[in-house]
Length: 226
Image (cartoon, rainbow, N blue to C red; front, top):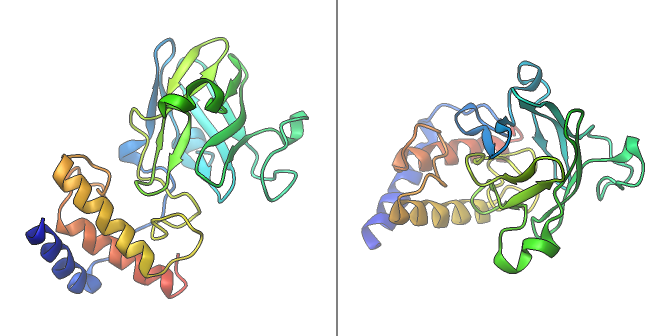
């Protein structure tokens, strides 16, 4: 563990020369989640990418695309209040993000009807409710469609921004030293567990290059480039 932490600090110190990363809510390498009855759901490529899902501070916007069931609308990006969509009338319907990261609200698929992201009552006790894991920058848990069944959000979609800036790793709405500390914690956990939760540069591995990429994005964000 000590050697890993030393490697992380050394990589941070040498990372300034790394090229800046383009910002994206859902990257191309990790854009799918899985639904048993309809297949893969693509969170990025709706409308050639221009209408893919975006993660705002308190809500989602855009479309999920399915080859088998078509468009799924998670919200138009203009909720009735800053806290999110009211989900009481059609024009103010969408998926919200609670302060603790839990998702709630409704998405609409023309061919499958309403999809409910508020699965806290049904799955919260097991920790499988639909939610944003801000520390890991990914989705987890399950949403429910009355006509199609459970949607596994944890299957593939991750490395997302939860507030419009990937350098805001802890998702608190600001970019500061706490984000570097949070990323190092995720990085060390990913290295030890063999996961891709800290694959910041999206090359399929977690190593010191991800720390370098994170710090470059962080410096860009601090200087107003996020």
